[in-house]
Each structure stands twice: as structure tokens, then as C-alpha cells.
Length: 284
Image (cartoon, rainbow, N blue to C red):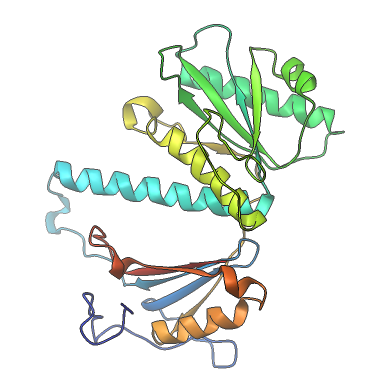
């Protein structure tokens, strides 16, 4: 169901400013609300969302305590945002190899293992003549109670013995999500229709198996869900559009003829569980 159709479950406030900011029109830098189309050229991805001017603050400088349901929703939103950013980072930087880094000893201090992995990344860069490279890693609690291990993603393959000696804390093993038919635990993965599908599958796998350990008691204060190499974040471009139909047309013009057969569209109006402002995403 398109977001601007009659009968849509989400009706746009008629007071919203829906002026369009397109390359062939006068640019209005004052627009703060309306339909916003964002495109990530290095990630083959775009999204359309409704942007409002912001919520009013509660008078008197006080806020009511959030309910458990509200807190759960906020946590779901934060996890979803982290997953989306990770997915685009994986695609842009071609992170197809997941190395599982284990510890011979049982480590329970999350900050300690994050520091050990950061040191490992610096050693790995030394092996590559000091050239910076993109990586993404997140710790995971061992399901059988042996503390933490780490899922570490890169775009290149390293000889197993070199990775083992460079890591130096325990066993390692690797999965190539662009080619592997089974995951690290033997679960079936299937064949990827396109190389980008393999990269997105790698991101989904990394986030899925670490998301259960993203709760506040596991992450702790001032810690991150995951860590990435700096300087490799995908860049985006954005513009205001009049309505979802215009966004659909713009996305169609961006996608190459070859990629049109792989174009996938997701509309939040098709999800009965969606409890936020509407959004449409395209991937190809």
C-alpha cells in the first residue's frame, strides 16, 4: 500500500511543508519537514521517510517515566538503526569474511576483550604494510557459558595460520558469506543471487548473533554495540520529494537496467507490527 494513497493507514498532516528540493529546482534550505528520500550510492540502497519538525518538550522541564513498552520500542528502534548502518557499511566496504576469534581462557570483561580486538586490528594492519582497512566486529557470549568470543569481519582473506598467530589468544575460523552454502554453525545459507546479497547476509548474521547481547546489562555504560574502522562510513545524498510516487520514479531512474531484476522494495504499511512513522526502502 503506497503511503500517499487514499485509504492509507498513515495520513500526512496537511500542515506539513511538502516543497520539493530537486536538482532542477530552486533549493530551499529552510525546509524541515515532509517526505525525505535518502540514497546511498555505494550501497545500492535508498529509503523514503516522513520527517516532522520535532516533538514538543513537556512543560515544566519534567518528563513522565517511560513505560516498559516504550522502553522496549526505543530499544527496538536503536537495534534497527544499528543493523541498517552496519548493513550499509558491509556493502560499501565489501566485508564478506567473518573470522570468529575465540579465547583459550574464559573472559567475562567485555571492555577487556574489545581492547584486545582493537590491538589485534592494529597488528593486522601492520601485516598489510600499515594500510588502513575497513572492519566491523562485535563480541558474542558463548552459548555454552565460556565467556565471550568475537565476530570480526573484513574484506580480504588471510592465511589461517597467519590469522591464528596474529590473534594469539585462541582458535580462529573463517566463513566467506559470498560463497559459503552453510554458516559457521552448519546452518544452511543457500546461494547468493548477487555479490551484494552475500555482503548483506554477512551483516545480518553479525548483527543477529550479537543483538541478543546488546541489552544494557551486557553492553554497559559508555560501550558500543560494535566497533568499526574510522574513515570508511558510507556517504548519503538526500532530497525532499512531493510524495512517494515521485520517490519511486527517482529510484527507478537510479537503478541500472541490470539491477532492476534484483530490485526489492519494502513498505512499512505492509507490516502490521510497525509502530513508527512510515518508511519505504529499496535495495538492489
